[in-house]
Amino acid sequence: MIPDGWQVEAEMASGAVMVAVAARPALAAIDRTHCATTTTIGMWLSSPARNSRGRFLHPGARNAFVQLGAVVAIPAAMTMQVLSGPEPPRRMVHCQLPAAPSRDPERPAAQLAACLDLRNAAISASLARLAREVGERGFASEVIVEGLGMFIAGELARHLDEVATRTPRRCGGLAPWQLKRIDEHLNAGNWGCSISELAGQCGISAGHVMRAFRQSTGRTLAGHIAEARIERARDLLSGDELSIGEISRDLQFAHPSSFAAAFRRSTGMTPRQYRQSGL
Image (cartoon, rainbow, N blue to C red; front, side, top):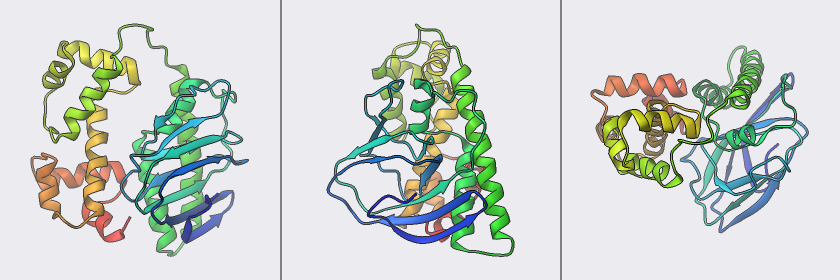
């Protein structure tokens, strides 16, 4: 389950669920493939590897490399290739999942694309809890680990089923440059921007940008902004240059308590707990 070059810090097996927290040193480059007989899922515990790109080597996949997200799932018996330039040291929680029912064992391209950047708050929060449970074993840890693993397997199957059954129109979505412009505007620190402001970046109306963004990505624009904001928070909390109050202001939350509530909904931890855990 753990790729070559990773050092296991803590691990636990319970039932059909196996979980490990592992770290690897800095690398000059990456070019490797991953394939397992069971479905695996991983989440960065350090800041996401923004240089890493991946693709599934499967006839039904979109074979262009895409940037990997903070959470990546590899369905059973599917081969994924990962490429990257120089990477700093990284930490990740890896989880081998029990089998879950799937209506589409062939994994259409949309499902495989979703696996490379899995955006599901319930799964992310469960993986963060698994990392804590494995690192700080306590009473009934095995029961909790198995239960969370089964929950993730079911939630993943449901998430991918929803992706497969979406029927977006073939035209009217945002162009790649417009999607990129939205992310660039957010990452420049404009977390409190309005939908109208993002629409202006794309040269279209507010109503159009909301409809077209959902058509292109399957997600709401508001949900995307919230997820990107929390991902940036995790990046900042991984270091200790800024206080939690400063991070809250940097991300343009109205109050630190609002930041703490939003972060906990997404990750299952408060910002202080996340920083103290060393994830």
